[in-house]
Length: 270
Image (cartoon, rainbow, N blue to C red; front, top):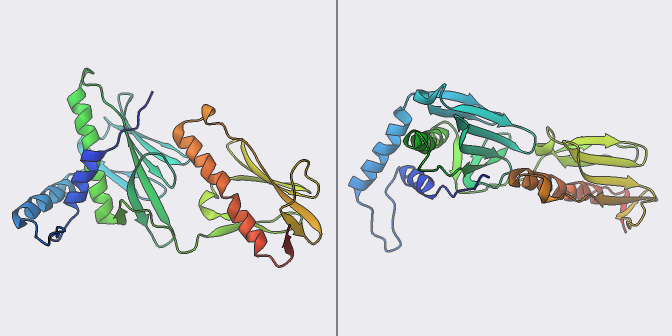
């Protein structure tokens, strides 16, 4: 069973290496320039490493070329977008985009969207064969992070929300509905005369119901037709932590659908 490990040492090292100017302490004293020079050298060493590229939906991950063919990557795009780094069936670390339950790395800021990146690292047993090699492979996540910072705008240790989250339109028999664009590749929307169903990988999330809805009070009325919301239970027992977090985030964005309805002048809140 995997255990999520806070990548404290790794991320602290990266944060220190990312400081290109002199940092000031609370007491207004200035760091030793010799120390800063060492940190800058360490950062440059990471950037000087020969790498190969792992292409993802959001960015390119550059990992040391010496591990090419020895470390494989697997991309999972079912519940969130996860890039796993694995060596000989030993899980090293994951990069989790948009949603995840790993340790926050930061936000990748692009012209089209802001993408939150988290990292999950895995315990390595000291007794395992080739432990030192796996540990080195794992620590070389620093190379990926430094190259991300060099190639993109990566705000470390911050979640930066877009000023206005984009939505896409869903045509229904009664009224247009709007749902976050970030879920467009994952959500399945099924429309019928009196219901719009939202699901992900056969997991029901919520329904927007037009007309009678047994045991559920109307949210409001659109041109005298009742509109209500049915939310489905999602049990954490059947999913990994990352999958559950992802599904719940998609489900909670029913609020975006509701906000769209409330902004329609033909919709009257109950």
